[in-house]
Length: 209
Image (cartoon, rainbow, N blue to C red; front, side):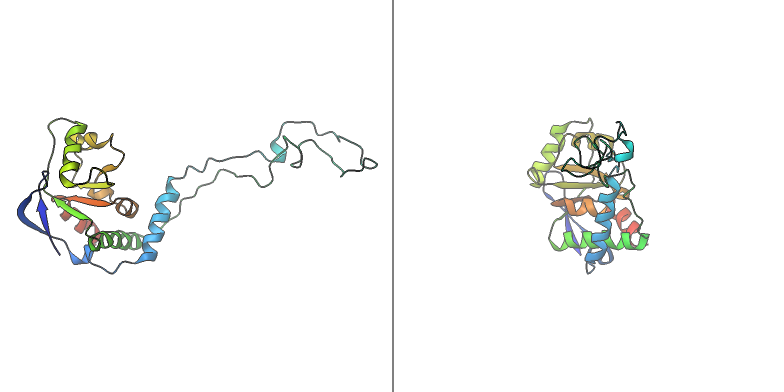
């Protein structure tokens, strides 16, 4: 698949990038995508939720009223879940939500996500660029030139670039990552994926194993 390479001003450079069909042109596997996204979101959960159950409530354990003759249900403790301030029945407990997926499935999911974006014409290849100093207005100018100022975008760099990353950090709709940090969730969460020319080799190498 051939894609025109443009510069940060949105103009064509006259070069074309060759996107591998083995990475950007496969038949998407929706179930693999589902599992990988599910794992990503599950791994973000802290799992620190906690409610006190009956045994953990501070309070007297004396019998609060006589067993019979009151006309109401018998009650043995103020800590009972049926009373205000009592323990919670089957309340949430701290737990780990993460689960494992094998590498081949995760690789298939990322290739499927990239193929979906390629099929939707939502992948842009931009020649490598950098900034002399980290300034948000520099990155905003790039977004405007590419027509992405009002869209969620994902910029994929070949390697870490501090100035580009810091320039984008204040913009909620844009995220800058390296090729090694690419994930199925981030690809699908963006309206447009912007691949810097130098990142293509790393992406195809990582996903063609």
